[in-house]
Amino acid sequence: MSVKAANAEAIRRLTAAEPVLVDCVPASEALGLERHTVLHAGPPIAWTAMCPPVQGAIAGALRYEGWAPSETAAIALAAQGGLRFEPCHHRGAVGPMAGIITCSMPVFVIENRAFGNRAFATINEGLGRVLRYGANDESVLARLAWLRDEVGPLLGRALRRKSLDLRPIMAQAVRMGDEMHQRNIAASALLARALFPSLAREANGPALTRFVDFLGDHDQFFLNLAMAAAKAALDPLVGIAGSTVVTTMARNGTEFGIRVAGCGGRWFTAPVNMPKGLYFPGFGVEDANPDMGDSAIVETVGLGGMAMAASPAVARFVGAGGLAEALRITEEMREITLGEHPHFRIPTQDDRGAPVGIDVRRVVATGITPLINTGIAGRKIGVGQVGAGFVRAPLDCFTAALEALAAG
Image 1 (spheres, rainbow, N blue to C red):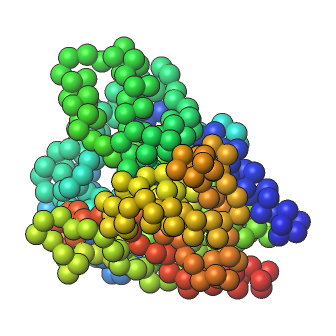
Image 2 (image 1 turned 90 degrees about the vertical axis):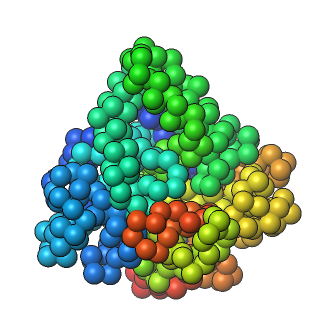
């Protein structure tokens, strides 16, 4: 198959995806995740190379699971080789920021009805001091226990009663101003409207009230679902011989990694960049950790920073300017992509489809790297989120991927 034909097939599979939210179950059931196995965001990494927020999140997860009685004991267990670390991507999952998944955590199950594959993501915890940003105090662990013991089972029962087609929700949310990475207000509201009838039939009283209050205060709830929907859409591209389309972009706080359709599961990595953006009061660039998280899978499917023109409010929020700059960024992203998404259409660009299908050849030829919207984690264990912004993918991993494709 020629490169042109391979890439046409890759774009066809990507845009034909039909991600459907079908269940919410423990990671041990969905992923076959074993005790003392910890999934993390980004490409593979050893404990000693992990940044402090990722180590802090792991320490919190070990206490949450009951595998360590304290942060000191958790760090000692990890440092002594008592854990198995794997990227979320190696288990068909994605995780925001630190991306930690352990066996008892509930995960959403998204099925790509067009190709039969599944993808998984945890329930989004909310903003601020949360595990994914490296916070691990008692309030963080209590929230995780509530998600495990009450919210996950409730969502599972509701979704088994009625599954939810995510593509129409995402398409409508883009028309309503979401870019599906830093802004998920519309998508979260549309999800709630679709989910509430089944929730009301499965629960009442305090449990339902607690979850409704949580969802009502949580504009970013849909983010993890958008990530898993993107993962489900991209996995059918893996292994298309000759294709130069990127199937994964992910960061672990130390390295940025990509995978390309024609190279299967092989990672190409480079040092991760520092985000630029706006900081919460009391924080500045000196408090920030380099970029991390699997959430760049959203950009890989044509949303997030790639679709900045759909969400000019986000451009200003992350420090990238207003409408004119948002339009410019999306037009720049069209230079490194192969097509337009037929379902994710941008009103501010006369309903053009979002740029989709990042081509490593075009990235290397132009020197333009994907722009990714992102949260900013504090660089110290326990601090949590300190701001929001954007980051550029490093060019070197795209160059390495192109060289590998050329070498056959």
